[in-house]
Length: 467
Image (cartoon, rainbow, N blue to C red):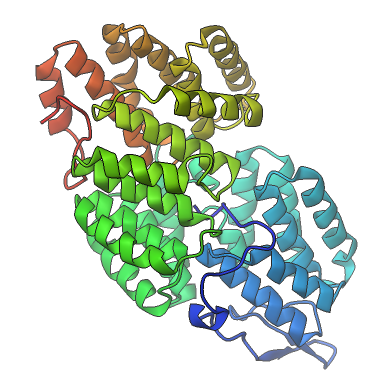
């Protein structure tokens, strides 16, 4: 979830000092002119002479990498200490873009660009990269990222835009993206040493690529160094999922979440992970309680995209696990999807919008959205191609109880599910829908075959009728 950030004015649940933020790098490097320039904790020069501005920027970066509260406030503090600090303006633009505040993001990046004559080559390249992210297709953004990191591999805020299943590579629509992310992180690993953020991000990539044995020690080492990090806790939760240990995940998160601020963006999503553990244990009542209190529309503290994905996927998984339909919750999510995601945009959120439309019986609107996606794909502007339109039609067929069509559409899609984006735990929704269709169609040989082919070790199949 590295691309999902924090709101204004959010406070932590415990004193900031207890978050174990690393000390700012107090070293300086010598300018060619004979003067000195401050550096951040990754040893990269920053174009400010204000120690206060540099330290506030460093604090904002660490809070961003931790997925903790207070990111915007820290970058604002950096700008207040030095209005000419281009890097702080660029970071603020990136955060606002993630909030879907396009005008604010453009203004902040314009401010950074206006200061560009006085910045380092690295900072100028970073500003260009963020402009590319905001204005160009994902393939161009991935290319710009790789070009930038080839020269400045320790520019963590740039790497952070792809170092998760929902990052740039995760939105690329390509098969093999998970292996490609592992290769990128492996190449960068010598530049980071035992950095807590890099370790946990590399571990997430390895885990998603099925390399759990390699991921475990990295997660453990990063958690020991920075136990308050929401991102590291998230990496651990995914490792538990892929290891097939839902009860361990529930126990870990129940304790860890006691000190995580409700305003932190991972608050809702980590409770989503807890709810999956409850479903795996057959405790549908506890799963429903967690939904109501922590990641329903009323309870979720995250961004619109995450609210959509967590709530819609959970409500559907509850039904697949045997719970009755919560019509009121689905109506609420359908209205939210219509108002916040009126047009096709990216595969992973579009998958959840399509599911909300299908449950609502909104076939005409969903067909129009499918046509949008297909038109975009033909124009080269929808990287996942036909994957989401196919899944959307399968969802509509499921609502009509045309389970043979669901099976025909979804089974071939399993080989391409990586193109949806998101984690394997999240894209399991498609496989579980296929298995439920097989159960409803009485095709139990297909159920056994599909379950037998499922990746080893992972958490159980949370579908009623699958044993």
